[in-house]
Each structure stands twice: as C-alpha cells, then as structure tokens.
Length: 338
Image (cartoon, rainbow, N blue to C red; front, side):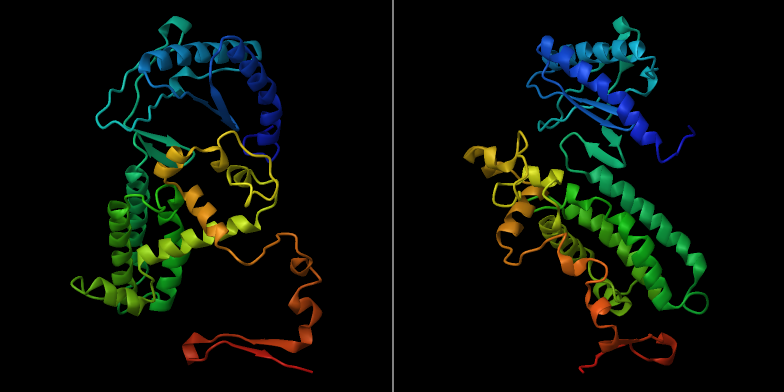
C-alpha cells in the first residue's frame, strides 16, 4: 500500500495496537508507571517523576521493552529519530542526557524546544516558541503578498483583506488555546501577533508606516488581534456544548457538563481544592463557560438534518440577492410571509 493512502493509518493502528497492549502488560509487571500515546507511526512515552534519576532509569527500561517488541513484530525502530524532552516548572533546571548505548541506540540529548504534531513546546509550557514560529511564518507570508498589489495597482483592498483573513489568520492562531486562557501570561505572544497584523493592515490599505495601528486596523476592517483571540476562545468553549456524548473532551469535564461520558482518570471533578486553586488551562475556561450557558445544544437535533432545515421546508418564503461590491450594492435577505 502506498504512502498517503486513506487505509494506511487504519491498518497501521490495527498493527500497532497489539504491540501497545503487550508493552503495557510488561510495564505493569515491572511496576513502570508509563503512559503511552500513538499517532499513526509516532509513539510517545510519558513519565511523571520528581527526580531525574528515577525518570531516566524507568525511561531506559521502557525504551528497551519497546525496542524488543518492535523487533519481534518485524518492525524497524529508527533510533536516530528518537527524542527526549523534560518539562519542569523550575527556572534553569538541569537537562540531563539519556544514555541508550547499552541497548544499541544513541545518547539522546534533550532540546530547548520540542516539536510534536505541529506544536512547539518549551519546558515551562509558555509556548513562546510556538507563537514565535507561526507569527514569523505569517509575517513572511504577509511580506510576500506585497507582490500581489500595492496602493496603485494589483488586488483591491477588499480582496487583500479577504486573502489575509482566509490564508494568514488561521495559521497565526493555529491552536492558540494552548497558551491563551484565563490567568496565562500572554502579553509577549499577543505582541508578536499584533506586529504581524499591523504589517497586514499597512499592506491592505497601502498606508504609511507611521500610521497608527488602531486607525489602520479600523479602516481595513480588522478586529484587534487580542479581541479576535477572545472571540475565538469564547466560541471554542461554547463549541464543547455541541459535542456528542462519546467525545473525549467531555470525559475531562465535570459530571454536570460531561453528558454522561465516562470520566477520565484525571478529570476536573477528581481534583482536590488545592489543585483546583492553582490550575490554569483552557479546559477550565470551557468548564466555567458551560456552567454559565443557559441555552441547550444538540448536535443531532432534527432541524439541522437535510430536509428539515428552514430553507428546505420554506424555500419559497426566503430569497437572496447577490452582492455586487463594485457597484456599491449590498446583500439583501428578504422574508416573504404567505
């Protein structure tokens, strides 16, 4: 089967699941408290310890078990692609290496930042590297868009705005919920994104570089980036109310908002008062927002199904007029009552 096939991740999961099950059995026999995650062919071993000595010892044992199991399954483990990363709340904490020469691997040297599935993690989970990477990427994109038009030729300002909102903003705000939540230090991250949006507003309007940021954003029809993030965060919180009861996210919420989902081992209701006092996360924001939500949402409500929607039942009562921006016309929506 070729790479990129739709069946490739399914068959890969069916092949790897027995390996993960055997690993958990052997890890329990050796009293190794290890959490395993897998995304297609990317595996992850997670340990939580207070000292590095015990962490390195258990990590070496777990890595040896995985290596032996993969060899018995006829799979090749690429040791040169293995990485190690430590999370620590202590500033300037040590970052020891992991010696795997005894099991035929390499000496793994931890990095300052860790990239996994498109996310950039730092040791203290401030996600400054994540924001810096995507803000720099979008800033480069905005500068490259300059060849598409300026104040005298090329794309119209309306088209420039549409291009920026459609192609740049989603990249800049990619998984912003990792670092944007109540109580999180977000000043540096928002400053990077604001710089990127200022460049975009100058390009859209063809304004001078000394123009005030608030004015050019208003003329370009761009909401300030901190308000845009606030809007997206509120939408993501309320979107949890529309999830089905089998969704994994609901298993992390309290019983009031879980819709009967089976609770996870570390879901919010099991946290102690001391743990809840210092906890800051987007999950807690979702919990608080859902508690204040008065409307009821059902993702499988009959009125959203095909054939039951408003336009399906009353097509002759609603008419649309197409928008023509070049002639100054506006879009109109009219309802006709019988």
